[in-house]
Length: 335
Ligand code: A2P
Image (cartoon, rainbow, N blue to C red; front, side):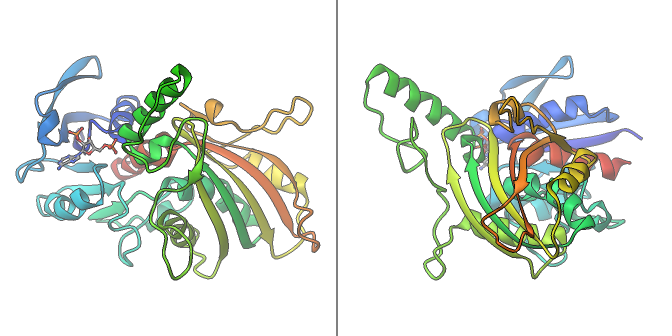
């Protein structure tokens, strides 16, 4: 049957991609409502060959809506997702508001579609790094149990929203023109620079909020609450795809060729592992792609036990890391 969908945060970096993913998802849509702040109300945007007007989010936004995709930050999700559910909608929430609630499913469709209940209320879309990492890691863990992960991320501006992407463009243009640029969205100069992820540091542990999210959510998605994960999250001057270096320690010695073989048939993964051409996953090639690119598969010789394999990944933060994963959840729900 045709379904009605609302997109909350439809004008944001992720919201724009949700619109594109909805256009391409092959769903039978009878109504699409685009919601944002009052600043954007009245804006007309193209959709599926026609056009739609953006409306201000309000109390009556969810009447008659079957599915509501939220991407307007945690505060908006906390306020409005319960209201959308009360109005009869199923919520797919891209914020971190509900991800670690015990009774809220945290879903990557290639990994754990079985946690979606028959009558869902809110379904959480995971953190972008957790999604991109777990797509290949779940395929490996299913064959050879993973004992420990060491992750270093190279995260794009898109994760901090449309304004941060604009800041990267403006700061780079200013730098090249020899002009001064005072950061407005992020704390540090972004052009030709990189810095520790802007999420606040937990003084007790020294880890920042992004690192803590990735650790907790990866454990929840993989259903491995005891998994040891060390991580350093860094923001790099790339517009929209995240990269990461991961060392995967298994319970047993696993050959790099076995890892390559598992990943070559893993859903949502594309191998980019050309040693002769020195061609491995890159954010510019991951941008616009639904698959996670994986390569540089080799023994991590830093682990003398021989049980560790090193990988390099790149995945589009706005697509698989956010909008596409949310729309893939919607596709599962609609069936
Ligand atoms: P708007 O463009 O009208 O400000 P991003 O993550 O790229 O910063 O996008 C945030 C999204 O959340 C935008 O669509 C933004 O709309 C929306 N948003 C921000 N504040 C509110 C609000 N108070 N009510 C509804 N939507 C909001």
